Length: 329
Image (cartoon, rainbow, N blue to C red; front, side, top):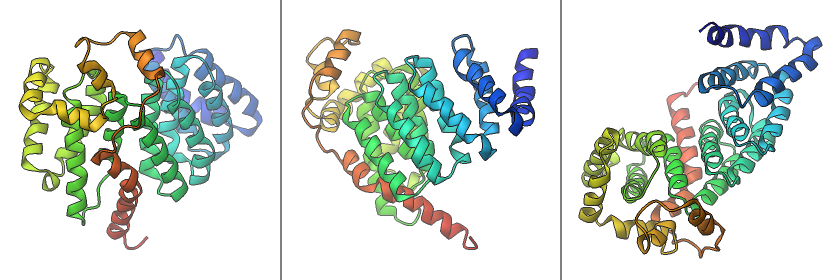
């Protein structure tokens, strides 16, 4: 407990108040390198969270940005998966403290590198961080880069990556004035989620992405078709309780989700491979084979069309909403 209190209360003051002095710049760099890189392996999850919060605190001081980004690039380029995940988490929390120029020059290139990583956990961590960037910047160049990367996540055919992308989209408020667009957007998300519910998703993906995405959609009841709303509520209830395996199969047969999944991911998608083979979880070798094999272009579904053609509008819609609510700015 004493160590945790020290990390929570003393560490931020040590970094910003003592080592943050211009004469201590070299000491700050070395201390942060030891904190973020060399001690990564033995840190517990709570310690990792407190360290990230401390780094976020010193990022409120622009003078320290260059030190932080130099260390972040060391972490991104590392072969250590834990360091890469920590880098993605750090990039996510420091987004509010950088401007568009820094985001474009440092944050996005680092996230694109992490998003291209072969390790799926690293990839999913980067998707989460991309969402934070999308929430804070409406700059055309930044929006275009995020759209291209989100499209790449969808094209890789991973169900879990798709769920993570859907969560990031549903977390972005839709324009309140355009009910037609809101309904089209909600329908595409609902169809995708109902299809994905029939697939094998890890418990962490369900907890961190699928359930929050459903909760986001249920907030806008005016945009939801009654049938979609009822289906989402059932998925939310069953997935939250953990007793969903049998229900998923029953719902899949009742709602015709097998064809929806095929339509959403294309005949060459991972599920298409699964349907003709062993219904159990695929082995690591099978996953690697699927990832390595060349895939024909996936079918351009409604969700993908909305993502490709409407992502910029989603962000600008949010910006317009802010302008309408704050006329004095």
